[in-house]
Image (cartoon, rainbow, N blue to C red):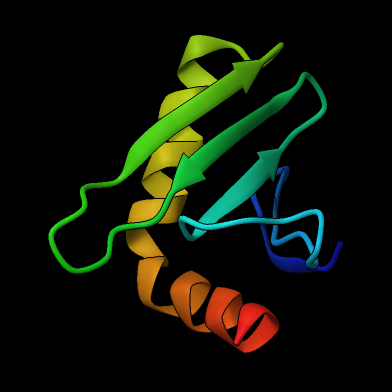
Length: 82
């Protein structure tokens, strides 16, 4: 499970197949927990799919990181998943 981005105490991960599955999404991890965020593509909006243990303010920061780096994260997701 490679960290495709590290920023401000957050690691953004893309899991490998076969465990991973569509739709394209990332796992954002910090010291307190994890947020799983679906990436924007075509007509789909960015959506926080799951949060475990992460504080609300950190979820907002994770969402901001994903928003700011969507193109890179979607590119890496597609490289890993084909």
